[in-house]
Image (tube, rainbow, N blue to C red; front, side):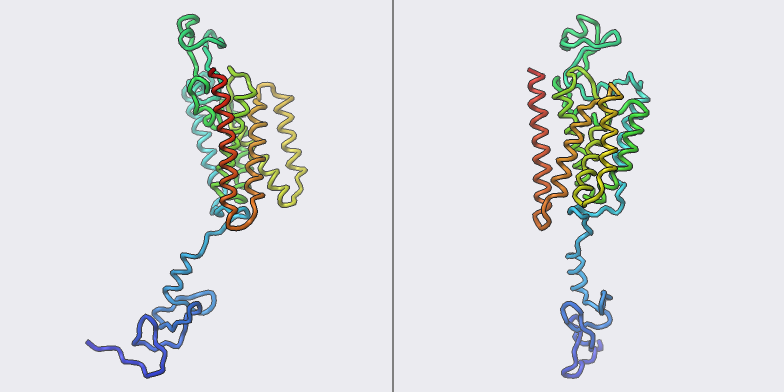
Length: 311
């Protein structure tokens, strides 16, 4: 087997191929490299190892508030819209306003007995069928704990889901590109949970609440905090929020002001944690700790209310 010629003494050789002369050096480690080992860099060439090391150290783009920058800021909003629409279609094809899914997914603080086109409060499951020939619908206090989450994906009327999904499409991508996908999803869910908590505490305990509006109002609150943080003109946002609260409290009697107000306050709190966390290596930990604390407070509030209703 023919051996490669040995370069003359004093001539630099490739660090990976000692038999090859090399008059080019890696821009990072300064080791001599032959043409086979050269990798194009922003300036000059780098060796194979330095390119690999640089790839490991390169961080993905980050948003202004620490989250990974999404390649498509509408992806999460589209997924949430698809989930809401899928639930709505399932409700429509299984009876629409009379669908059993509404009873299962809507937020009802206290279980109730439904019969004769209405409901009878204060009648337990055992008495419901025997006394009035009705059907008992479970509420959160009687074991349907999932309703505090499923309510934010449940709509019945066309106008209701249409307005909520349009608002989500408008607000969602703006917030996701600012805070990142995971933080945006946490903001959405915690806002919806805050709406559920206030419904449990302040709404009719035998009434049913549906809608993603709590989470949507949370996004409105978050956009307000974000605009204030960057020194933007918040008058337009305040006007929009004010109109929506005016509709909630004055013009439409069957809208859950508790869900809207709870979601809005939850969105304010979550956004404050995300955008006012100090920059630096500890920012992500502070954000996670803050959001976890908000979730814990909401969980305690929900559990305390459930125990009070059940007692």
